[in-house]
Length: 308
Image 1 (cartoon, rainbow, N blue to C red):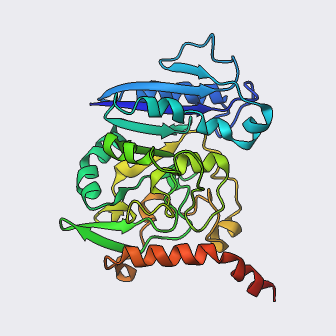
Image 2: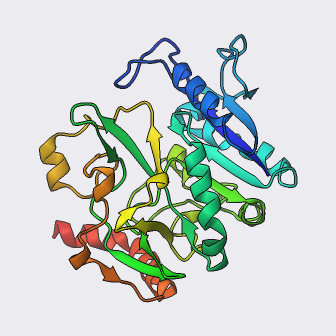
């Protein structure tokens, strides 16, 4: 097996230190690449950047330095410049991944993906991941993108899977060659159509990581998270090693708002709702997704009514 991993590296201020550990972006990038090279399959890594900072650095990856205007760089277009090369590689690898520079995809995450992908793909479901950060006070890990607990579930081969229907953005995408080849033939791939999850207005950068499982594409019925004893499979969690979101919002904001991304509201063992409040979901995904598209298209009416 083999995988091509593409990482955008926006580094306008190389000496700036970030996050709880106060490291530079290059420190996080190098840590992540060293981690990725431990994956148990053949792994080729391509880092896409915009200046010559990496030219004299020793990292186990191919560096692609793109010529990009300051205007496009500031808009986030660097994150889309990996796609022409990825498309050229479509016959060369079994798996393809787009990954942000500080999202630490591990061997356990890979095993998790390989364990579930076939069963879910056959039924047109996407396997989800959850990104977490550390709370260095209580030593617990908190999910970044879950603003309210997940409650809907289905069963596949007698196993319970929760619907990640609130926010399935996870700072990366990974697909096998078959799905990847379908993706690159769409207008979503070339950014002619905009990706969304019907809830948030994503920027250019976020849309590149939202991938083929964006809810308005509707290729997958839904994104699912496997349940083990009514908790997420521990291998679905991927660390955001910059760790700069946990203290971003106050406790009042975390408590009162459900729609803040990066809120770190629930620890990783408590992102599913209590068992007595869980809801079995019937397979009417096409109808649900159609309703979401209509509501999103006419969302301006909601704003008008709110202002009356």
